Length: 229
Image (tube, rainbow, N blue to C red; front, side, top):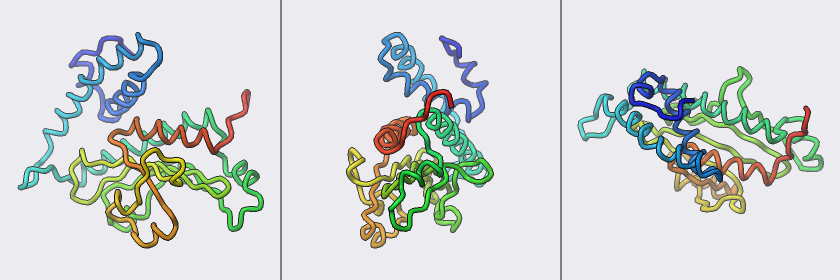
């Protein structure tokens, strides 16, 4: 990508490309190479400004918060579903997340059932809360091995503004830096059921930070991908 992005360059990007650029820049701003991290850190404010400009052009609710129209909701959902797919693709280059391997590693675990990382049609998984109409967006990926289930979700509660997206990593408490009960971070969580199952999660301000946390957790529980596969 160009080293010096102009305002015109950013305006010519699709929203999906802009979000992808933001994630890339955010990740590279923490790179050990100072040239890479400095350039990425300088790019981030420009990308943020363009993202904000597009959000500010949306319709407003009477109380000043932006409601997500159905057309915008579909666009945002598609963008983040693709974002999740890109993340999963990158993760499968590092880790063996196949159901076959997870099943082999989980022999002896009662009622074990491996999870798909993506849907049958090659799309990000669709959460039950969205299916039931309880939230605008509930798209996710998940992985299960032995007695551990982890997931990465992008959630937009009903009537929340576009910038109200939640990036949630769900995992056992021991694998989270700042664990909270799901009932504390998701309006649609079944409080009692979540507590009984010990379900915990952590919400992050950005997709990139949540993706980094999810990768760290996978590095602790999933086998590395064999070289030359």
